[in-house]
Amino acid sequence: MKKSMPLFSACLILVVGLLSMDLYNPSLPEITRALSISQSLTRAMILFYLLGIGLSQLVYGPLSDRYGRKVIIIIGLTVCAAGNLLGAFAHSGVELSIYRFITGLGVGGVTVVCRAIICDVYQDHKALSRAFSIFATMSQLSPAFAPVIGGFMVHYFGWQSNFILLSVLTLSSLFIVLWTYKESLYAPMCLSPRKVLEGYLKVCTRNFVIYSAMAAINFSIILSYYSIGPYIIQDGFHLTAVDNGLIFLLYPMGLVIGTFIFRALNTRNLSNQHIINICGFLFTTVSLIMLGASLLVDNLWVMLAGMGGISIITGMAAAPFMSSSLAKAGEHKGSASALQGTLKMLGTALGLLIFLHLHITTVWPLAFIMLIFSFFLLLLNWGLDKKSF
Image (cartoon, rainbow, N blue to C red; front, side, top):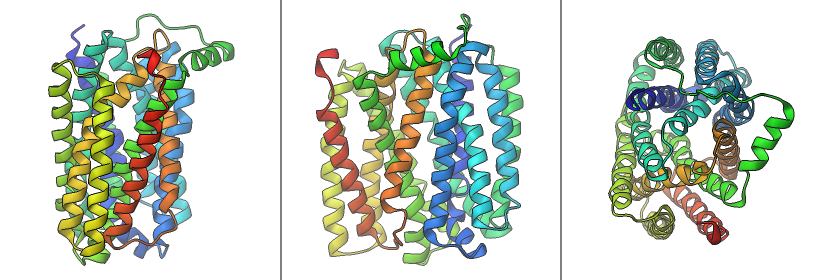
């Protein structure tokens, strides 16, 4: 089996999963107005989505180890498409939140399987890191283009059009994966509650939990910008949803640059931990500069420069966080991927609770949130068990 095809399938289903969050991002202010709900409830929809992803992975992971990756892909993408389609017909914030939770239940299967597929195919630690760096680069296709497409869709066809488009794209990707992906799990495990628990306990080491928490903070940084940014851009600076989508092109460009920097450092035999140390220092420095500048002058350029630097750093850190947590999974790849994904999503949801009830339309609160995340990253890095490296 050529390794490129499983990697392609993993990247494709990951992008589809991310689309369910990124495509409707420019619609957030419009949804707030159309459904007559608060900014905090609109952002709470993201929490329901993350909870659906995080909790479902605990079920999908062991099931994928027993029945294979392909059947989970079919279930996950089908549920995801249904949740998105239902979202287009929501008449209240509560109803849309329920549909976002259902969508998350489907995306949970997609995210756990795409990481497990890579672990199935790439056994060597360095090869695994390189594969995850490609994986991280491809993951930026959604945040790069989805907000642009979503901005045009909401501007010309209304916010419901994004959810209809998401449903169509999800079903289309399902047919593509069915055609291109051949099962990558050749030694299914026996499934029992005891085996599932043993699998989770075996992979749940101190460093596994810390690296997963770091991945959660890294993802929280991205989601914080994607959930707060539209309100700063559209309500604070009085730009349109189309402008919002075009501005958001810059952030994934930084993420891609960051992943290429990681790959360059990785080929020079710089360890994942050294790269993580560098990212922690740079992130704190850039956050402090952004906060200071935004307190002096509140304008779009301060936000773009600060978040541009932060995007490069989060791009550098994404692959080492993920590969370091999954490198020692052994035969429990599905369980490890599920637990890592659950910790990441629930940790991200917890991180987003920091500003859930804040009405933010200026840059400095966003910069302050970035600084808080940077301090947590430094604290977690200090708590790693250095003897196990």
